[in-house]
Image 1: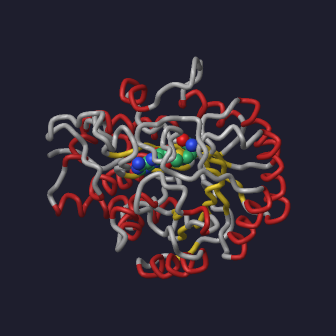
Image 2: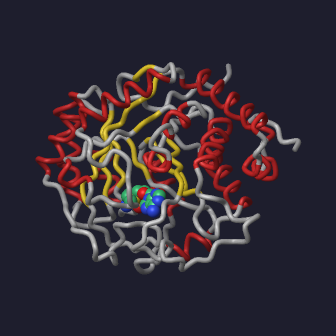
Length: 357
Ligand code: SAM
């Protein structure tokens, strides 16, 4: 093992070596380096983004996702505009600086409806507004930006085009893939977030190393990565894609997720990196703390009204599905303090370091 730990010298081979690393001392070095860079570049504040899951309706059939259109075992919902604005107001009362509106790809969330909700939230709460509504049309993305949306999250999920195509049945002909949409978002002036799944059947170490490099090349403002969690009512959950041979297949484990978070902090030192709910679902006891100690600086507590939260079942056993938002806020503040960090105030956007003089 000769892999080094700085951004300039980490190449695909070095990243693959780190992803395969299991020596505790070497891993300790990895966490320590990521934690140091996190402290130097984004500080000790952990930014809280209140997540509102505004609709579980979806026209897509992603092979990993429990709210895919072909899953007829779930009850569908779409929140009203008033409910969404009230959830944002709750996020504000809880001291969060940002609200994230997330949904399946739901055309019922029309361009004017979303624009109106964004405008109301921005006007009434002053919170930064992040949207995560899937692959939407350029004119919709533009209208929402004009209405006051600050950020947009769209994971590329995997940078391997063949694997992506296999697990994302196309809706019809489209001339723009997710990378093209990420470029559009950037041009529209959004802060852009993306990321990938870890341990999807068919994902090799070489492919995961490319995912990491892709995040660096895209110069992302936010990068969310999490383990693939099995949902029984999905094609991946039912084993429709065979895993690779054991020494090539990436495991969907906590350790692999933490390695990705730490390597991302090294590759993209000033990006915002969340400790994801998927990781907290794998390890409810300490998953979030481990991520915060391996380079993460953001947490997204759920402020979706309780009657909807369990219905947004992208995977089973999702963390914090039945806690009141107030309880989540208190629990997270305790976890953040326990690892010696502070709760961030304000919107917590990406603070780019000025270019060298
Ligand atoms: N429709 C939007 C989109 O596709 O970007 C946002 C909603 S989608 C449910 C949000 C994220 O959930 C996806 O980017 C995906 O990475 C994650 N996700 C879905 N199913 C998952 C699973 N079984 N395990 C882990 N993450 C999952």
